[in-house]
Length: 297
Length: 283
Image (cartoon, rainbow over all chains, first blue to last red; front, side):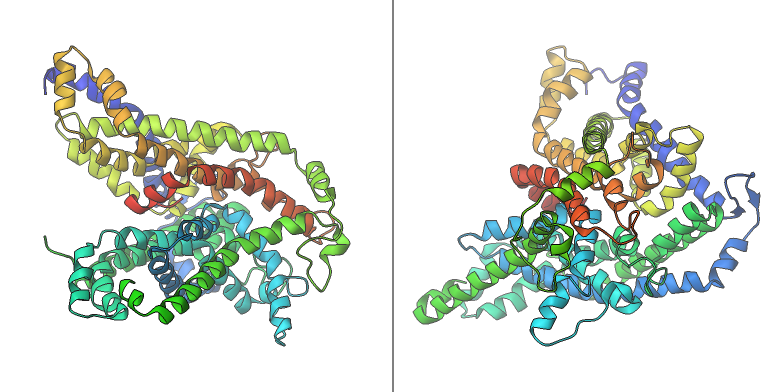
């Protein structure tokens, strides 16, 4: 490129990069590093931080609250992931059909995605109200007495997962739609000439060629759902059996940091969460060549 | 599917089934919002009916009046709007400039610096929230707009995405401009940016949505009425002085919070869906 010599060039690099790089260093890189340091301290924000080695991590591993949070997180992911994945994929396959009015369906199923998690949590909290909510009303119509939902830990977690699947389905479907539209029509034409039925088209063409997208979706969902917050923070009923019993790692981090001012302990917990996400993503990456099919060009 | 066309009866059945599924999907997606709207127009006594009424017998706006008593609505709306618009504008300026340095300038160490950007993308936001809070607190920014706007400006994701778009533009454009005597700022502003308008539009919308809906960060840095944003104010309506939640008022708050976002979405949905499909990024 012309005019890219010496100081003149660096002046322009500096001009374009400085705002972003300075911001990144001050508001992202530096906080990450200091958080790693806080994890090894005892700090309540009032007195100066005190270095305590691995004590936070030791306390964590022996804390029943931490294990409760981890158990809850894993429990909810174990229900959420297969449900959200299957329904999202099904929705995408459906939306991908050329049919009049399909655009309206796509628009509608995406509305929950653009709504704030606070709005969605509160609307569903009302819907899951055992006495006056729509869900138990519907169940009563078919003769079932519904559970206490957000008043009781296990049913509260189911309610949270149902709400999350409802909110995320449109997003997952859209990710799959992107993958579906990259599959060349010529594969289908060839298969149809060979007399393949619609199910075989899906089974032997769509799904294998969609596997890179599936892989991406699984990783994205895992990373996102490990960090769920608002629905867990807002949905369980205060002063009920579910109160403080439905916790995830993120809500525990937030409670320790902002209610108990235990900055060091909470930082340590956030790094454990990061480690878990990192390990799971790493395992997924290693396992991908067992099932992900990349089309060679 | 094409070959069903050869079997007329099958085709009609298939068509009916498709319409049924379409209707079911629309109802499932929209019903909770209609229920929210319906509840917001009821008075307390009608809410606690064992048979839910979808169209309220007595439509009343009392929950909205109640809501206006509890939170300063114009102020809160302004705060949300201000934070969202300032934040996305700043983010786009910062990110597109950095993307220009990464995509259109050649300098030593460029790939190393870019790798730093990518590496920070891996860190989950929960790791960042505590040290960012401590930083913002030591800067004296708690309960100011600075806390709500500034730390969010430097998301490497938009830089990454814009760099991709910039790289897709042939270098001939820059070279022609240089011959005409243009400097890098002119090339950036007059040539490159106008060519990536779709990416900018998508990023602007997602940036707006992120900030409009954000809860975790504002919850701890902006609780005072002068700076509080809608989601935080809305979540604070639960319980209330009489511990029993006034669901009609909470639903009125939900309506007020979701409506502006909904309007933006309905008018711009093409950019939303294209952006998510091409990049896989969410809010």
